Amino acid sequence: MICEIIAGGSRVHGKAYDLACSALGTPKAKHHPTALHDLAESLSRPRANEYGQARAEELATDLAADRADQRKADAA
Image (cartoon, rainbow, N blue to C red; front, side, top):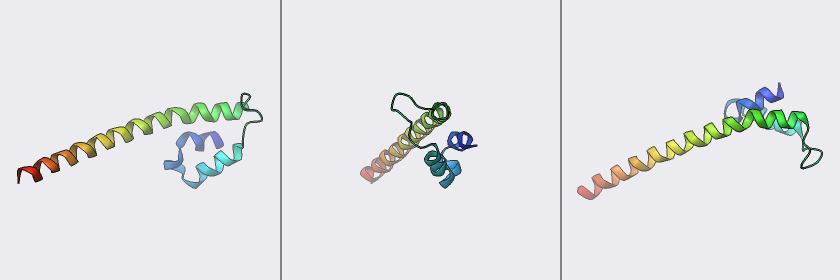
């Protein structure tokens, strides 16, 4: 269940996501995470990439709209 919540991400599960991350705790050693840490990371990494791409597209759209508004203001 913890891995499922982590896979859904904080936007979907909100506070439950934070609690799930806390429940995992820190790995016993930096280079020797537990299997649960490995699984959680493999489930959450693709979501992070998807979020990053969607956010980049959103920012590009906002920038294009701002530029169009500026061109209209400059023309007026």
